[in-house]
Amino acid sequence: MPPKAKFSKEEIVNAALDLVRAHGFGALTSRALGTALGSSARPIFTVFQSMEDVAQAVTKAAKELYKEYVQKGLAEKPAFKGIGTQYILFAVKEPKLFQLLFMTEQKQVPDLSGILPLIDDSYEQILFSIQRDYKMEEASARRLYHHLWIYTHGIAVLCATNMCRFTGEEISEMMTEVFTSLFKTKKAGNNHD
Image (cartoon, rainbow, N blue to C red):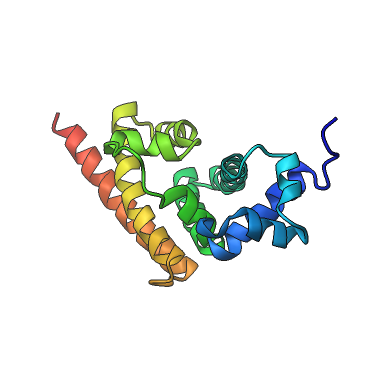
C-alpha cells in the first residue's frame, strides 16, 4: 500500500508556482520545493513521479493564469488591443511566469507562423477576434496579428526583464499608433488589388 500523501497535488503545484514566481523556473528543485512546503522533498514524490511532472504541472498552471488575462482582454473594446495590453500586464505583474511561457528557448526553431500557436493556446480565439472586429480575411488578420505580436512582445520583454517601464497611457498610445499604421497600410494595399 503506497504511503498517504502529506500534500495534495494542488498544494504542491501552488507552492511550486509561488517558487517560480519569486525566483524563476531554474529555482524549481525538489529540495527548494520541499523547503517551500516546510518538509523534505520526499512527500512530493508520493504525488508526482518526477520533478519533470511537477514542472509540467507548473507550466500548465501558468498557462491557465495567462488565459485569465486573455479573457479579460477579449472582453475589452477593441478586443485585440485589450489582449495586447493584458499580455504586457501579465509580463509586468508575473515577470517570471511570462519568462517561462514566452521567453523559453525552443527545442526547434519554428517560423513566425508556427510560433504563436505553439506558445499561446488562445491563438485561434485571438485571431478570430481580429477577423470579427475588423472584418478581415484570415490571411490579413494573421499578418496583422503577427506584426503586432512582435511589437507587443518587445514591450512585454522590456517590462518582464526590468529593462524599461511604461505607464498604461504610454502602452495604450504606442499600441494604438502601431495598430493604426499597420491597419491603414493593409487597407491601402487592399484598395490597390
